[in-house]
Image (cartoon, rainbow, N blue to C red; front, side):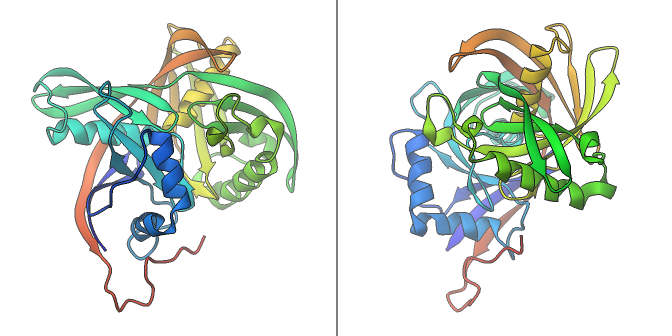
Amino acid sequence: MKVTVVDYHTAGEPFRIALDGVPEIPGATILERRAFAQQSPEFDAYRKFLVNEPRGHADMYGGFLVPPNDDGAHFGVLFWHKDGYSTACGHGTIALATWAVSTGRVPAAEDGDTDVVIDVPSGRVTARVTRSAGVVKNVAFRNIPSYVVVRDVAVHTTRGDVHADISYGGALYASVDAASLGLGVTPTHYSDLISIGREIKWLLNDTEWSKHPTDPRLNGIYGTILYDDLGPSATGPHQRNLTIFADGEADRSPCGSGTSARVALLSAEGRLTVDQTLHHDSIINTTFQARVVASVESDNHPAVITEVNGTAYETGRATFTLDPDDTLGTGFTLR
């Protein structure tokens, strides 16, 4: 194996883009390619190679570039993490749009806005990239429709009984007030947040609420959003969260698709109106800003189109190789 990558971070969360060296993934659509990647040990070895130690780590994240579903998008992507392939990734969308404009993959003016259209497993997203003097200053992506699935689900955890709200933002998320668990979204509680977030995700993953209403390929509770409500600001609600996704991965960013899922809940509660902005902080105090841009119907649910704003920065480039004599092969993970 020999794979060339470029790495970014979005609000602190890594995103590794595989550029060269990955075989073509069969399929006519993004979801078909995702299914192939999930079922092919030979291809999945490339994910393990890039995400596992010693080339990656338990919280690494990235994507494989693939053709779009049709000529209405610039490209497609399969998102991956240490446990497999996700259906959506907002921080990855921001990183990909930044990369696409900065490298000329999508032509853009030196000043002003350029739309980058990307096909992801959950649908088609559009990222508006704003540049000044050739430098990317901001990316605002409009997600697929987001909606509330169910509220106030009782969850019996090792820390006591809590209640979760489940919503969809390209993936299904369970939102739980951290204070109800006796925790706060701070580095001091980091290990406890990971443990309980992982527990809640798996307790809910086999329930009726983990089923996507129209496409079983999108089934599963992807993550638990543990949040602190920091009260209203002059422009809208202010919250801080740590999203625990996959099997115990902690999102360093405020989580892009999770932010959309939070917007759906806050909008339905009347706490986020169309003229307001959610200031959504991470555990490391980076921020996404999000708003509602339209109300729609999706999957038989009242839904909203969300816009999430953030920034991404290149952190490095590398060519990873696998020595045929390396007994560790495609690597390992300790979590």
